[in-house]
Length: 328
Image 1 (cartoon, rainbow, N blue to C red):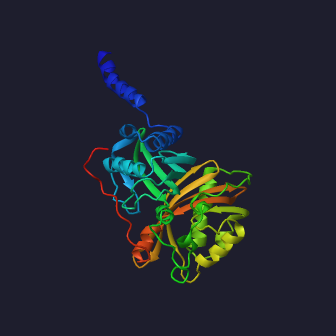
Image 2: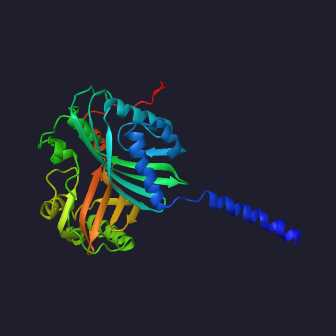
């Protein structure tokens, strides 16, 4: 009997340890991501970052910057808040599934200090973005980012508008404050479906439409009431989106898009993707698609276009953020 008890105690003890430190629920993970916006970015409380981020945290950011780890991340926060003392993140969406959370947000602030070598301009700046976080035991282990750094440079005058004859895409000539914010959300509702079905629709739109160069297939997953939010200021509804697709989907040269991560909750699907542009250039981005009655009725999309434009020689290199040794 004693031998049997002795054999059970270690197993029971290990079970208690596992119960004591469980993997957090998706809802808890979403709350942790919200705290990053509220406490780390909006309040500048860098001590909280040590609580919320893993020691081996990895930051995946295609934009110029060089920030990869936790110490660099904290100095990066400090640098942005020095440039924008009233820095404020508004989180519009948190989509959580398993150990991942997708976050859609808008940053606002008045440019009052040097930012990556750009002197203060006094301009009210807005920046939109979407991130995907992965958490491990209530700690943020890594994040993939897609935010409009090009838009920040345009607003403070670091990037001059490109003439249409040089670059045909309209996002290179944005000038209005509203061009850098998410548009008004759609009021269209319907049967939200389920995460599994919506994810399948999202994947099929890419596989059957974009990767096959099939315009009709891509449009087949989109509702006539579709609302689009992107870096293209003039593309907002089904008609303008249809015209945009006609310009971007080529049956003779299909876009090779790879979906790298997917998160689904209720009627929304978040996907991290990369597109092979040829010539060794890759474009990355993150989308959030909302579904109703088996169709996409709304999409928020942000692409990391700045590294591509710099690689093409259309814009000067954006000054990289350097992780300093001083106190912050």
